[in-house]
Image 1 (tube, rainbow, N blue to C red):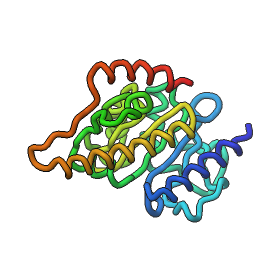
Image 2 (cartoon, helix red, strand yellow; image 1 turned 90 degrees about the vertical axis):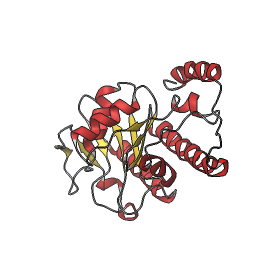
Image 3 (spheres, helix red, strand yellow; image 1 turned 60 degrees about the vertical axis):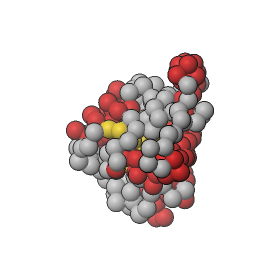
Length: 219
């Protein structure tokens, strides 16, 4: 089995994530669902993105055992990725970033409501905050799956965010949109001030666009 194309793609989006300032050092991680069952292509642990090449990208099973032998170990956050793939057969890519405005909301444990038109058809609606769990733990993985639900994004308490998609391109687009919406929300709260109001999309629009999300996520 040749995994080169997926390893190259994971490495390319890891570089985009770092260039966008959504992570520093070796923080965050990206994966793609591999061919067959229990196969994952994921960024390695503790390797700065500035040094990462496709040859460093790990191909492993859900336990972290390597299918293609490389010197690097899989991301410490592999349990989150595996849990998401098992819960969501429609998901083929997972991106976890420490983007600033998403992290701000995660620290104050504030969900991101549907405040801009793109959020519902492309993220699935309000973005929930996963309950706190220690990094790398099965508890955190379960909490993220619960917060994600059927949507394309979740915030991770005191940590960052996670987005998913049918492809790495879709998961990346969701990551960019999530951080943009998070920034709009944080700045809107600041502008509104104490007692001020930030307006969300009307309920009927959210309902209609949620139906659109169910179609678009599989396209």
